[in-house]
Structures are given as C-alpha cells and as structure tokens.
Amino acid sequence: MRTVTPQAYRTVIVAIDGPASSGKSTTARAVAQKVGLLYLDTGAMYRAVALAFLRAGIEPDPAEAERVLDALHVDVDHDADGAMRVTLDGEDVTEEVRAPEVTRRASEVSALPAVREKLVEEQRRIAAAFEAEGGGVVLDGRDIGTVVFPEADVKIFLVADAEVRARRRRAELLEKNGEAPPLEEVLENIRRRDAQDRAREMSPLRQAEDAVALDTTERSIEEQVEFVAQRVRTYRAAA
Ligand code: DC
Image (tube, rainbow, N blue to C red; front, side):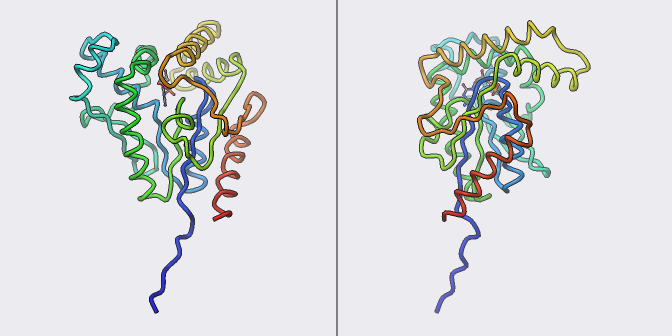
C-alpha cells in the first residue's frame, strides 16, 4: 500500500488590511515569522510603480498609466532572513521606495485602475507561488480581504487612532533617520493618505465584512502579533 505523508499543516492565506501606519507590515512580517509563512508587502509593489513614474517623470493619470505599465516589471523575493525585497525591472529598490516623495506618489498611483489591475494580478500570482513553496502567505495592504483574496482564511483589519499612528510613525522615523518632521506634519500626512485611500473609486480601503477588527491603539506589537498568530493556529488546527 502506498503511504501518503500527510502535510503537516493546511496552507493558509492571511489578509491584513488597515490604514497608513497602523502597524500592518510590522505585524504581518512578525506573524509570518512566528507561524512559518512567507510575507508579501503589497504596499511595496505600489511604491515600486510610483518610483518608476517619478523616475520617468510620468504624471499619475490613467492614459499615461495604460501607456507605460506593460513595460514595467515589479517583483518580490526574500533574503536569507526572510525579509522581503522588491525589485523594479530587476533592480532592488526596497530602500528607495520608502522615500517621502515615493510615499506621496504611491497614494496617487494606487488610485489608477490600470495600476491596481496589474498589481492585483501579480499579487495573486506571487501569493500562489509562496503558498506552494512555503505553505502559506501573509499579505498586507488595503484591499487584500476585499479584492485580492476575498476567500482568505484569516482576515484582520487593523485600526488605531490617527494620533497614535502619527506618534508611532514619528518615533519610527526618528529611530531610523535621527530626525523627523513635527508631529502635526506627520499626522496631516497620515490623514491625507487615509482620505485618499478611503475615497478612491476602485478598491477603496474598507473592512471586509468577515474581517476581524483589531484595535491596536492600546496594544503592544507583541500582543497584536500573538492575536493574529493564534487565529492562524486555530485555522490550522481545524484542518
Ligand atoms: O502600506 P504602504 O504605505 O506601503 O502603501 C503604499 C501606498 O499604496 C498607500 O498609499 C496605499 C497603497 N496601497 C493600496 O492601495 N493597496 C494595497 N493593497 C497596498 C497599498
């Protein structure tokens, strides 16, 4: 009789959505590491397209997007520590896409339907490869649970008070760069991006009906990571 080695776990897709600076990527990355999944930061892909537009001096409008998108190649990979790298036409742009002007432009280009169509398709393709390779994937973004993977196995929507998010963001910038803009400015940027992400016509930021809201205003990163990791374990245990 042929023996079949049962898979240790069922594969799992974890969707983490939420507004700017709500701790999505920190949480998603740590959850992926804790429960042994691969991590896909979809925001980095929108940022890479924004960088391409900036470099080429292209205006973020629908006609221009249609014209240049086919020739653009955004891809992701993981380094030996499991950290995700994003490439634009083969060039590693992981650090460059964090620049403030790229952040601003990303919010605009992510509202263009042609950009979203292309990247959603790429995200599904990459996630399927990760799922086959690593047993599952944690994705973070704005539309993962609503559009990219409406059938995701675990769906989380992170929420946090805008002022708390601004404080966290500013602390992060200070630690990274040794300087940061005043709190008011950081807060204003966060509010503007939230408004743009929620108001856009295609795939606006919103909580999927079956997503669990996780308010991180008064939670530590460890607590929010454990909250999501526990949901993944419960899902796997039900296999
Ligand atoms: O999460 P982030 O700040 O790196 O995202 C960069 C921009 O991309 C942000 O303005 C929102 C947008 N985005 C999106 O529209 N959909 C996603 N799935 C991920 C990011």
